[in-house]
Image (cartoon, rainbow, N blue to C red; front, side, top):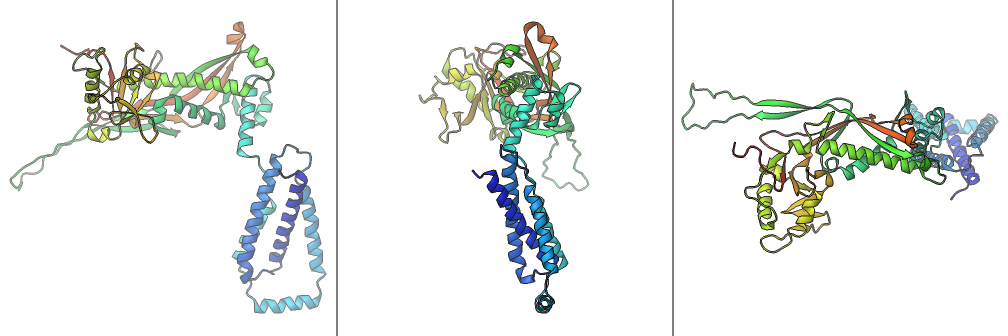
Length: 452
């Protein structure tokens, strides 16, 4: 690793050469045939100047000011100018003759080079993205647990408004990434981050075509209407609560930021997953939740513990979607279904659930399979199968809408600190009734309309 002393020496040499080239340009000493080589050298020196400045900014030892080299540069520039003033008349005359023989670069070319040199001379180091992310993460965690003041937090880039802290992009991305791994609807659905409501047109009435063997003559083609409905994604307030004991927070040697952020991730994702899969929480209903909106499939004959009958029902379920949907379909099942499938054989005695040869996971009847406990019904021991195109589950999230509020008094009686995470989000399964996107089959479920 380069030392600060070496970096400062390199910086000084780099800027001295850039200054020298700038002086030549100012005096009109760069000819057209030199332009390409000078441009390449300036580009290289500018890139090196930024790299050196970045390395200096990221060194732990900040005792030596980076500007030290710049003061010397100014002296050198003055020296260069004094030398040029001392040029003899003979030299000036010789240069005048050269100018007659060589083409001088255009003002546009000169301006472009001067701009590139100025960029190199004014290069300021910035901390690496990784270093910056660590600082923001640490400042955020230390503020919410009370280790630093609001002023200190603001100086480190944390946005605070009326007691609520906007979750930094670095951390919100981490939470969302975790959500995508744990919430399969984020993983396989369609996602859009926006500031406005999103409307999805859904076909609810098809046009009709006619066939005829005789010529129409004056018999015009009858009009048929198509009709669309509109489903709006309008993100609603969404929050989750995590608590941490004061004893844990006050222990030295504990990674505070990891504890806080991990607890927030878990609390938020549990709430979000419940909203998207079931959407039945009082005061936070979701009409487009997967369990509500997926088309129910019921057995044509009772399955109970008969694996061969279950196999036949799964084949029928797989062939429910229209061709266009079927081509893009996959399975999402619960743990009970996975456990049963792992011991099942098809009609030829081969394992019904098998691992895909390319290592992408399980396949069932030729389609990818993933599982989650969020797919459970009211009875977690009952097998639940979802099949369809999960891209039809649309998720909208407001950019910069994730906030955090610290709750101290509410949990003071139990010596805990609460953290309430707040977000604006909506997620719904959207499809035309003519092309249902996802079907749901719960083994043993009875059609409530049977016999009506």
